[in-house]
Image (tube, rainbow, N blue to C red; front, top):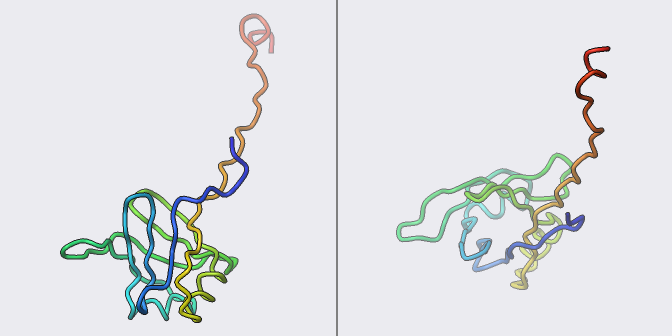
Length: 120
């Protein structure tokens, strides 16, 4: 299993809003909600559709380092400082949307069967 953060998309400043692309899906934090998100508040995430509709929430992690995006496909994360910097500077370069590495499965001891179990 991979022990690295896997990039799955990108987030970028776009006309006062934050555009998020994960796979083939496009989402947005509206221009009215984006400043609040950058300042540490929670907000809705909208799917770009006709008409647009709310599909998830964006919030900060307990440590304050990552922005957690709750999307229909699961939770993904963006480095909060990078997203905030790009937003404040109106920098349209993408910031990686990532998923954390999956924990390695724990090794299990072989189970005892037969007479050894009955004797215990």
